[in-house]
Image: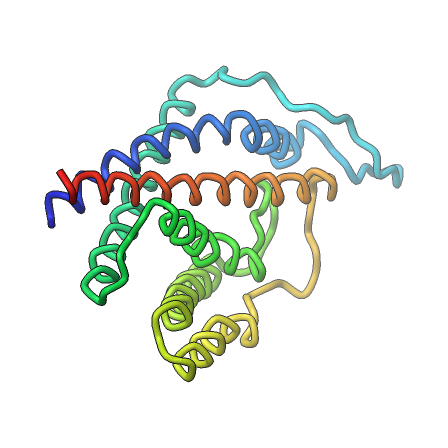
Length: 227
């Protein structure tokens, strides 16, 4: 089982990591590079004359090969780690009598997206470079706690009895009832339209890659198990 677990996670994680990097280069990186123009002051949106207009458009892509390679490598490592968690979940699920299929893998992938990306983004949405925010340690603690309790809550809803499902729903809501750490004022330097586009593109890309990760990991899990 351990061999199947690791093999399915590695193959799925590497494949999805490459796909994730490609989607990011297409949808997210241009917005990120444009945001960096505002971060460095090369472009100003809220100018001294009161105008709220600024030039639109991102710098040329693929001008920093090392940075691009790091993006691909980071995605491969990150999604391999996420796939490993999914594979462990598959093993525990099957021990409890819930057989894993490729179709169920899609649901697992969506649940992973909800826990790791969507739920934290409700309180701390993806931010452009240069965005001033609350203390990073407070945000990290809130983010980690939100991921953990959301994952546990989804597990209770999916596999537990009715009362456990109610408890899972309470767990999922708890971080948002407490509230994410935020400043009392706004300090954005980039165009609000760009920030909104960046947040939606980031979440949309994450949703697609997590669904693929669940599908690939479950498909390989079943294949290696039956081999």
